[in-house]
Length: 125
Image 1 (cartoon, rainbow, N blue to C red):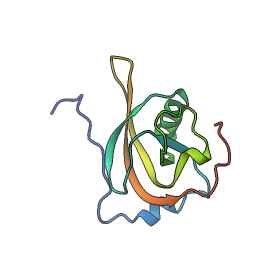
Image 2 (cartoon, rainbow, N blue to C red; image 1 turned 30 degrees about the horizontal axis):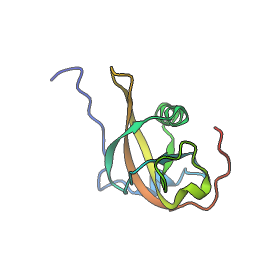
Image 3 (cartoon, rainbow, N blue to C red; image 1 turned 60 degrees about the vertical axis):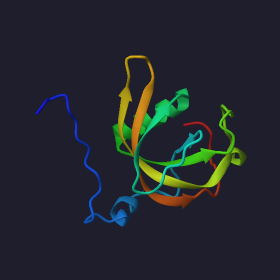
């Protein structure tokens, strides 16, 4: 097998989401998505465009943090605020951040559990 090939462990039926979510605080960082919805159990690549989003996914991957993914109401909004986001989202794990040769960045994420956005506490890391 080629050493360059990587495998990502997915959640199996034996692992409960309760184990993963038990360490989750009442607040967690949010990743605003344009024209994209993440569902629980889904593994998908996401193109990262904003500098703040790039910092978030890199930190989440490095520190093994869970994040909240929420879809923006208007994809053209560059700096979405609370009213620009849908109220339902998905808690997700950043499995891998991939920097491509054309200077684009893709994050491979896995949806874990739905959540409802109550309030945005801060817009800065």
